[in-house]
Image (cartoon, rainbow, N blue to C red; front, side, top):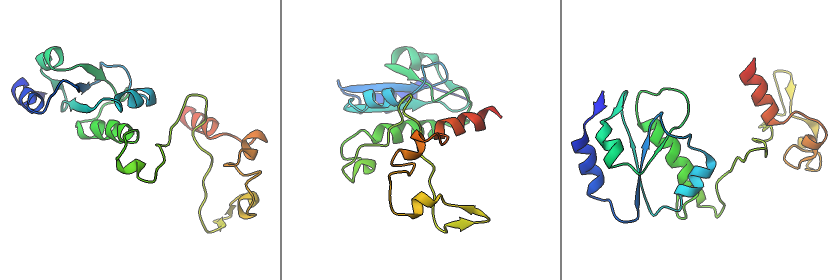
Length: 167
């Protein structure tokens, strides 16, 4: 299904102002990244458009859209998952958004910074697998979040992610 131009132009033209930016989420655009989210967070009025299955009429792309972005090299059937993926990342950088309500900025993944440390919950032992002792001791010096485990040669989350994706 290709979306017709008339309803899209009507939906965007009505609220569009001089500070608006219209972004078409489509496979042809550059990949939406953390840096893209930060840049778009400075836009006062952001409009995210996306097609359904096949996309939008080419006149929408040529005459209505300011920028095209892709969420990656995979196919989704509807536009809502693409919009949600971009919106939640963008919202984390905007003052007043729910993800910033505790006064912190968004969790940010930067190239080379690693994804995150391993996380555990209770119970301390589950089906023979134990939470590392350092996490039960109350000190963070050697814990993954304190940095000691990464420095000590424990596998990083990035290393584990790469291993899981390549096997």
